[in-house]
View 1 (cartoon, one colour):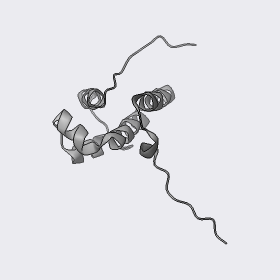
View 2 (cartoon, rainbow, N blue to C red):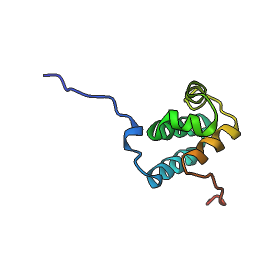
View 3 (spheres, rainbow, N blue to C red):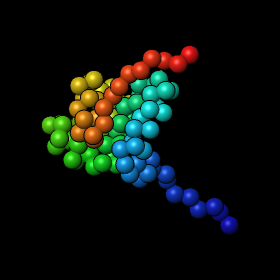
Length: 96
């Protein structure tokens, strides 16, 4: 009998700001800009892309494109999306 599987979507598991912030923080540690954009896209989908689009003044389609693993969003887009999601970006000294 074949093993039955279903696709796993991280957006289904991002229920609160703490989980979202931890997810972004983990991805930032990796340092891959494409992963950062995709992770912010995952969080935006978890919150509701239509709502994020309204709050940022951008179209859903442009956000989906920019926040994909192939997207290259401008910093202003990332900051606007993070603000709409109740998150902020911060910087701290790197621990060697």
